[in-house]
Structures are given as C-alpha cells and as structure tokens.
Amino acid sequence: MKIEIIPVGDEILIGQIIDTNSAWMAAELTRQGFEIVAITTVGDDAENIRRQIDIAFSRADVVLMTGGVGPTKDDITKKTLCDYFDTDLVFDETVLENINRLFAHKNYKLNELTRSQAFVPKDCTIIQNKAGTAPILWFEQKDKLLVSMPGVPFEMKTAMADEIIPRLKKRFQSVDYLKYSFLVSGITESALATQLEDFEAQLPGNFSLAYLPSYGLIRLRLSAWGNENLPEMEFQKGKLKKALTEILVAESDAPLETLLGEALRSNNLTVSTAESCTGGNIAHRITMVSGASEYYKGSIVSYDNAVKTSLLGVDKSAIDTHGAVSREVVEQMAQNVSKKLKTDCSIAVSGIAGPDGGTPEKPVGTVWICTKMQNEIVTQKYQFGNSRAENINRSTNMALLQIIRMVNKEQRTKNKEQRVKTE
Image (tube, rainbow, N blue to C red; front, side, top):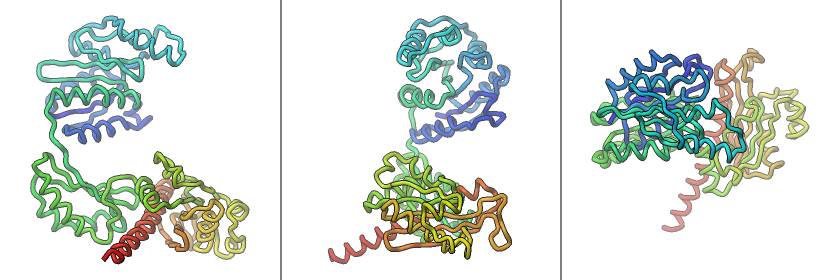
C-alpha cells in the first residue's frame, strides 16, 4: 500500500513556516510499515489542490492531507474536497458537540466562525478531533482513500496516533520496515562512501544504505522491507559495524543529547555547561530530553568576558594574554563551572561564531571546546566555516560528541576491568 502526503498552505510555499508535519508523518508511517511515495506541498488554490489529488491518486492508494480546514477565509480545503468528491456541506451536530466540549474545558466563548466548523461534507466519514475544532474527513472512492486533517501539529499527531494509523492498519496490510542506524564522526561524506564502497557493492538488491550528514556527523541507515530479511539484516549490520571501526560513535539514530543522557545515567554522572559562542544552545539541546534534571545541573552563559571572570572565575590575565578564544580560557571555564555547580562532568565552549570578529590569527569559525570528566579533561580546537548558525550548531554537536566519547570510554574501561575480575 502506497501513501502520498499533501500539506496545504501558502505559508509553507513561501517559507513562512517549516513543514514539520510531513516529516513526522512520513517517519511514523514508515515505522508502521507503510510506503511513502511522495510529499507534495500545495498552496491555498482550489484548482491546484484538485490537480494534485488526481496526480496523487495516480501513484498512491491513500492520500493524507493536512491544513486548510480552519474557519477563516483562506482555509479552502474542505470546500475544495466537496467539489472534488461531488458532495455538499451539511451541518453536523456531533461536531458541534465536540467543539462545545472543547470550548467548555478551555472556558472559551463560541463564535460563528468556529461554529461553522460543524459544516462538513455530506458523503464522507467524520472523525472527531480530540484536540481541536476542525474534524477529520475520511473520503473513500472505489479502492482509493483520502483523509484530510488539521495542520496544527498537535492535532494532526493526535489524529494520526489515535485514529488514522489504527484504521489504516486494519484496512491495509503493512510490511515491516527493517532498519539499523549508525552514527559516525570525523570523516567527510565522500570519504565515508569511499571507505564503504566494497560493503555497498555486495549488498543484496533489496537492501539500501543511506547517508544523512548533519553538522560534523553522519548517520547511516541500513534498511530493507519485510521480516524475511531479518537474518540477512543481522549479517549485514555486523559487516557494516566492522567496516566503520574508529569513526563509529553509536549504533543508534538518537540525537546526541539523548545519547549523552543515556551515558550519564548509566554511569551515575552529572554534567554542567559553560558557554560563550554557543549562547546556551548546548544547554537547550540537553534539556530537550525528558528527565534531563537527573543529570544536568545548569549552565553559566558567559558571553561577555566580564561574566567569565566574575561568575566563572576565569583569570583576567589568561584572557588578556591568550584571548577569550583559547585553550587556557576554555579549560578554566570547564573546571570552574564543574566546581561551582558541583558536577562530575562539564562542557565549555568559546569561539568566534561570526560573521564578524575574526582575525588572521583567529578567523571566524575558530572554536575551542573543553570537556571534563572528574579529573580528566580533553581540549580540542576546531576550525569551522563562516556561517554563524552553522558554527553554533557544529560547536554544539562537537561538544556533545566530545563528552559522550569521554563517558563511554570510561564505561568501556569499567567493563574491561569487570571482565578481568570475573575471569
């Protein structure tokens, strides 16, 4: 069974918002064993919407649409679907009851625009929206299916999880999607492809290897469809792991902040951060993980040198002699934040994010990162590019990666010592 996703909205076409809905839907549907054949964005134009539905039905069994079903004049999806399926809008009391229930819970007053959400296409199945006022519309035409959902991410995710995916799995046979992910660093995409050339050449035809680079990291996804490929998957992932050797960071596609949390928890360690050029981005990434308070104690964002000296206790003479972007300063930042916040580990970053501020000796993109675990410190100098956003994201990734490697190295050492004692 093949699915096409159609997000609707001028705001997506002009870049006013990012279409996160389609990415989430595609990932979740693939995980559930459904094949996505296309994702096509359409603006708020009735003729283009109808044309795209025709195109989608020519290559997919199911069309999932998001957006354009609200109460305002630019929300034309519902009316367009009535025209496409040759039906009319009728008032549905059950939808109004659902709206009243939601409004009563939030203590909102119902107005006529919101009440108009209860007008729905006559010839479709109505699925109540548990998280919003616009109902989910389920159209069936011969062997084809179209589902229209709100574009609000929380409403769409609730509808997909509670209603759409269970109904799709009941009606269509899904095929298990097998995948295995590796995270690597310290190599370019082209160099990695060269290194894995022999591995890829011997892959069975129904297997694929995808390269997903992002700010100093590359995620590798080995995949195949169908449970009958499980034995071959185990064999191939073993060969791939052996081919990656020293550049392997983790056998996972989880974000670095999740991997760090897992490593800190398993070793009963805590961490703090001292940030300059990243401006709190490392702290933000770490605290995006639920339960981070178990191991993350806090941060001192010392963007100004006066904060480095007054709050972090960095020697002013070190800044005067070596500059704020230096080994000497970043090591003091890491050691002192760990003392002040009483943590086992720490991360410190100081650099020139750009686009201004560089010198011939320290050009834009120069970043020093120091990570500390108990009495051990690792300090690295990185030279990134000229993009401010990229420099901040690369610095964040490299800092997280550096501390992950330290903690995992400690765990490997403990495991080795335990094996020796056991033997």
